Image (cartoon, rainbow, N blue to C red; front, side, top):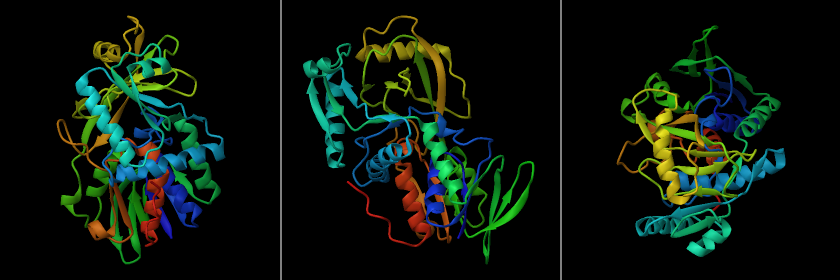
Length: 372
């Protein structure tokens, strides 16, 4: 089967790898000139454990299974990663109730090694922390996301697949032989494929609208949520990731570490109407206020604008977070076409698990049992 995967972000690369390793011919079409240049390169690089999501949801199922697979992949392929753990902290009674619910949800989702801590226990682990209560997620970690994506690209190419850079997809048309895909760019043209996977991230709804006979009512409205990050100029004050109680639209301005030990804070939640990747230095005021709730010792003048990402959300302010949308023929009625919408956090963690489901669905096989 000749398969086109649209988008060389982490989901597209993982899907291309899964299909190529099963013996399919794979082309990954990427509109830009590099892998992971969109959502996949603008996140916290966190391997999530899986406690934030409703039981039975795609986000919960794929995060828990994907986390186990991504750790195994990193270990077998020499990808820099660290199971550093994180503390989810409360600084008020209201927040304590909120994180207690997250703790219970994690247990319901089968997340291992969750430990509830009182204030003294949390401060023993992280002396600079301020909190009224916390819980430890020992399975949370970090990785070098670009090294991970490079490894996925390498396995696609080793298995005979290819990445077509600067190759935007303009339209998908149906024919008796399969899907006729029209490409733009410097060398425009058409090519016939047996199957297509739309993993275009922020561009996925536009691809769906350009797909022959795709039901217009199934194309979701894309809601843009910008997440800004600020770097920290001092030495790391914590050895673990520190997450506050979640806020509307996100997980709160948290402290993360990268593989070099550098500290980053973010993301915040900024609802926007158009793509904009600039970080407003004035937003640092909100960061100082939020961070000092759990780290009062944050020095003045120590934060600087770093980068931002834009989440492909399906719901807006004040609305419950939407689940991942993975649609095939059973949902939209079109053979050998997989549409992916709203693959935001924990998409990186879930990528290898999502990829296997897509491969199973294209092969008309029962989905593999997901681990809990």
